[in-house]
Amino acid sequence: MSAPTHTRPLPPVRRTRAATAASTRLHWWAAALPALAFGLLLLLLAGSGEAHAATGEVSGLVQVAEQLLRAVG
Image (cartoon, rainbow, N blue to C red; front, side, top):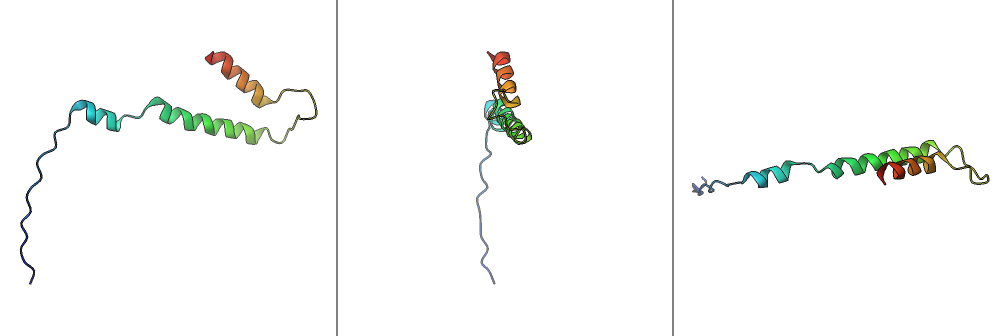
């Protein structure tokens, strides 16, 4: 037969509003960076069939990167 155990109840945890909001809020860059990386990798895979290394043409990825830099900067 097992012996009875007595445990003390834990005191209630007081959480401030800032502490609970910071632990559950997702920052904008936590969603934007993986989406951006996925998009860039998808562009790399989609444009790999048309290699323009021998010619002087600019690839689609470079054009998209230039447009993004113009939009941001």
